[in-house]
Image (cartoon, rainbow, N blue to C red; front, top):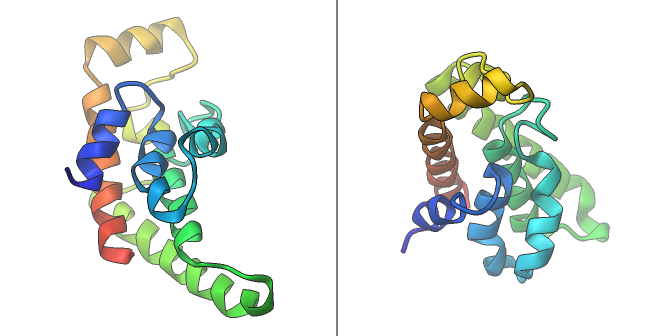
Length: 143
């Protein structure tokens, strides 16, 4: 099963950020519960503020884990990760026009009853699945 398929499967039970991070966490020795804890606040565009897409946040955490960052070589590693993050975000924006959760969900307000209804009735979880899959595909190219 591909990482993207694992992330999509994870998305049945966890938020977008958790789903992406969890698909890769084992590769970096991060236990499932710790991965879920690390990413829980990033769902819904960071605590459901609908800012940066949670799938992107989960991917950025994964890029950090992949950097094998150590204190003695931190400056080169930081710059390397920053460059990968900029490229990642650039590719996402090139495809979808934004990295903002609310805009990606057609201005659906996830914090209102009306927005929750709109999310369900318009099957917007499928849009989120698409973003989760795309983030995993980008990660696979970056790692």
